[in-house]
Length: 504
Image (tube, rainbow, N blue to C red; front, side, top):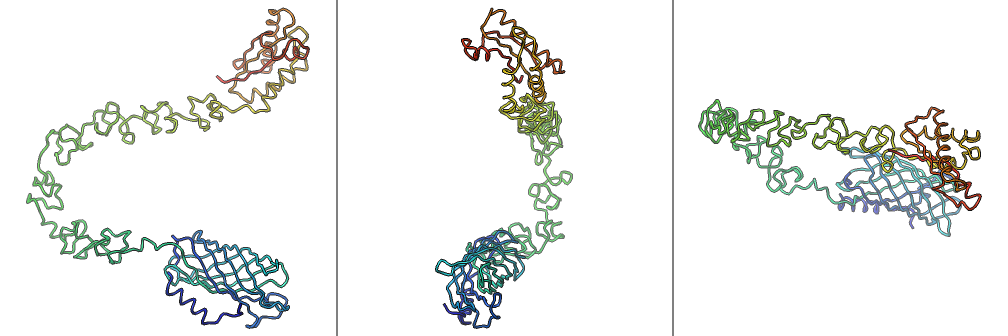
């Protein structure tokens, strides 16, 4: 690879750009770049300052991505040679970088400066390579529609010995996108088709691309006086002429005539006096000319007096609001009463007018815990944590009574205190306390004993000021075993008290 590109080669590259390329636009985000590189490995390392003969060269092909008006991302693939003062001469190098550019861009500027930095890796052959951190400054010169001339200078740091480098690059960046459609102008009148009201007919910029013979800014097709400059308020006619024009010869100038093609009296703004329904509103302006109506509803009847004509009123017998097509909204939540499941309480549209006090996605009428956020699958109530379910399950095995009695052993107090704490954390749940026994002894006695034991637990929670309206107790005796009564361990498991939480 030669050391220095000749000036004629560079000139040829730039000439190619100027002849065949156009400039990068904001709408076209992808671009390719080419750059000639000049590399100095002498000055930033241990060698002497570089002379012109010590400058090595290369070239770069890059993919560029527009991010916004302040940032670009670039991936350059670099080819070149490394020339060092320690007998390394013209060693081939291939590198790949990832670069972020911070730019100062304005559409009107001819030059966009930027700062850049990133990371890269260079391969020198024989499995030798080194990491690099490039940083520097660059300039994009906007010379054409779709391309820029790019000048960039920077420093490449490397932790590998003698691999720091100064770098200068000169080249171009070409946008890959199509021509901006907004620049098309089929009729060549200087007004882009995107805003041209007459894109196939050459016209005036003042008339948005439409023909305008008198150059008054009003297109001929809308100009009543196309050969005389006039004013928009007089439909393109001069003021003095507009005041004289009276197409229907009723004595009312067209600019003041509500019916310029039909004669009528001055007091009726130039319209013929015809009022079929006798409501005082001429048929010409009456939206319901055969029905007696009101001026406020443009001649249409309004049975409920809410300002919405019957023909547009979805609730014609009930006074409502215009925003809801004449239907009432008692709670003012924007949901008409006829569609509102909670018509007297302001709510949300997605819940058909019902509120969601705790914002858990479950409307209050369907929420068993309307003031405590929960889950939809649990009727709007918080789910009982698994560790607390486990604690309740443990309680049925941990509560102990005097043998054959309903008297709690003192060792059970701590367990019941923990249960009370759990229940207090879920104020919307109720608890059913169920007593069970094994099958030893008389079944009727077992039934009574199981209920008395459940009641003992009930009374203990009551002594801890637990709300009696939130709990109940029942005894099942030996009727619901959870294990075999034929073994000692099975009978021990069947003697239990269960705490079942539920929602109403």
